[in-house]
Amino acid sequence: MLSAAGDEDGDGQSNAAEDAAGTNPLLASSVLKAIAIARSGNDILVTATTVPGVSYQLETSTSLAPAGWSNAGSPVTASQSTTVFTHANGAGDVKRFYRVKVLP
Image (cartoon, rainbow, N blue to C red):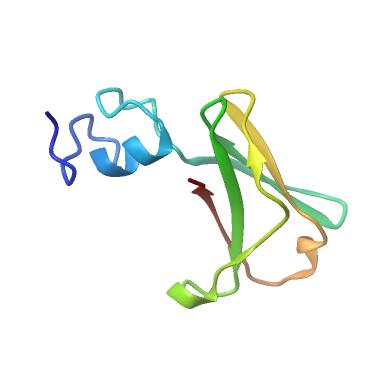
Protein backbone atom coordinates (compact mmCIF):
# COMPACT_ATOMS: atom_id res chain seq x y z
CA MET A 1 0.00 0.00 0.00
CA LEU A 2 1.35 3.43 -0.94
CA SER A 3 1.33 6.44 1.36
CA ALA A 4 -1.17 9.07 0.17
CA ALA A 5 1.35 11.86 0.83
CA GLY A 6 4.24 9.99 -0.79
CA ASP A 7 5.59 10.45 -4.32
CA GLU A 8 7.09 7.08 -5.23
CA ASP A 9 7.89 8.03 -8.84
CA GLY A 10 9.34 11.48 -8.04
CA ASP A 11 7.15 13.36 -10.53
CA GLY A 12 6.08 16.04 -8.06
CA GLN A 13 2.53 14.70 -7.61
CA SER A 14 1.48 12.90 -4.44
CA ASN A 15 0.16 9.36 -4.68
CA ALA A 16 -3.27 10.69 -3.64
CA ALA A 17 -3.22 13.27 -6.46
CA GLU A 18 -2.22 10.58 -8.95
CA ASP A 19 -5.04 8.34 -7.73
CA ALA A 20 -7.55 11.17 -8.24
CA ALA A 21 -6.14 11.92 -11.72
CA GLY A 22 -6.11 8.27 -12.76
CA THR A 23 -2.35 8.33 -13.38
CA ASN A 24 0.20 5.70 -12.32
CA PRO A 25 1.94 6.63 -9.03
CA LEU A 26 4.87 4.35 -9.92
CA LEU A 27 5.58 5.85 -13.37
CA ALA A 28 7.08 9.36 -13.54
CA SER A 29 5.87 9.91 -17.12
CA SER A 30 2.27 9.25 -16.03
CA VAL A 31 1.26 12.61 -14.57
CA LEU A 32 -1.37 15.30 -15.16
CA LYS A 33 0.43 18.40 -16.44
CA ALA A 34 0.16 21.17 -18.98
CA ILE A 35 2.56 20.52 -21.85
CA ALA A 36 1.79 23.45 -24.18
CA ILE A 37 0.00 26.76 -24.34
CA ALA A 38 -0.69 28.67 -27.54
CA ARG A 39 -2.71 31.54 -28.91
CA SER A 40 -5.15 30.90 -31.75
CA GLY A 41 -6.81 34.13 -32.82
CA ASN A 42 -8.58 35.43 -29.70
CA ASP A 43 -8.45 32.06 -27.93
CA ILE A 44 -5.88 30.45 -25.64
CA LEU A 45 -5.27 26.72 -26.14
CA VAL A 46 -3.87 24.72 -23.23
CA THR A 47 -2.68 21.17 -23.98
CA ALA A 48 -2.42 18.79 -21.03
CA THR A 49 -1.64 15.14 -20.51
CA THR A 50 -4.87 13.31 -19.72
CA VAL A 51 -6.31 9.85 -19.13
CA PRO A 52 -9.00 8.62 -21.55
CA GLY A 53 -12.40 8.47 -19.88
CA VAL A 54 -11.50 10.95 -17.13
CA SER A 55 -13.30 14.33 -17.04
CA TYR A 56 -11.42 17.61 -16.63
CA GLN A 57 -12.14 21.32 -16.27
CA LEU A 58 -9.86 24.11 -17.47
CA GLU A 59 -9.69 26.87 -14.87
CA THR A 60 -8.26 30.36 -15.17
CA SER A 61 -7.32 33.25 -12.89
CA THR A 62 -5.58 36.62 -13.04
CA SER A 63 -3.88 35.82 -9.72
CA LEU A 64 -2.84 32.69 -7.86
CA ALA A 65 -5.18 33.42 -4.94
CA PRO A 66 -7.14 30.28 -4.00
CA ALA A 67 -10.52 31.97 -4.41
CA GLY A 68 -9.63 33.60 -7.74
CA TRP A 69 -10.12 30.59 -10.04
CA SER A 70 -13.06 30.24 -12.44
CA ASN A 71 -14.05 27.77 -15.14
CA ALA A 72 -12.93 28.45 -18.71
CA GLY A 73 -15.29 26.57 -21.00
CA SER A 74 -17.19 23.40 -20.26
CA PRO A 75 -15.92 20.16 -18.72
CA VAL A 76 -14.15 17.81 -21.15
CA THR A 77 -13.95 14.01 -20.98
CA ALA A 78 -10.60 12.96 -22.40
CA SER A 79 -10.51 10.50 -25.29
CA GLN A 80 -6.71 10.48 -25.72
CA SER A 81 -3.51 10.80 -23.69
CA THR A 82 -3.40 14.54 -24.42
CA THR A 83 -6.30 16.98 -24.60
CA VAL A 84 -6.49 20.56 -25.87
CA PHE A 85 -8.60 22.87 -23.69
CA THR A 86 -9.83 26.20 -25.08
CA HIS A 87 -10.26 29.48 -23.23
CA ALA A 88 -12.46 31.35 -25.70
CA ASN A 89 -11.52 35.03 -26.03
CA GLY A 90 -8.79 34.62 -23.39
CA ALA A 91 -6.04 36.17 -25.53
CA GLY A 92 -7.01 39.74 -24.64
CA ASP A 93 -5.73 39.51 -21.07
CA VAL A 94 -2.31 40.88 -20.15
CA LYS A 95 -1.72 38.28 -17.41
CA ARG A 96 -3.56 35.01 -16.84
CA PHE A 97 -2.88 31.68 -15.12
CA TYR A 98 -4.31 28.30 -16.09
CA ARG A 99 -4.76 24.92 -14.45
CA VAL A 100 -6.58 21.72 -15.35
CA LYS A 101 -8.67 20.12 -12.61
CA VAL A 102 -9.81 16.49 -12.46
CA LEU A 103 -13.57 16.20 -11.99
CA PRO A 104 -15.20 13.49 -9.85
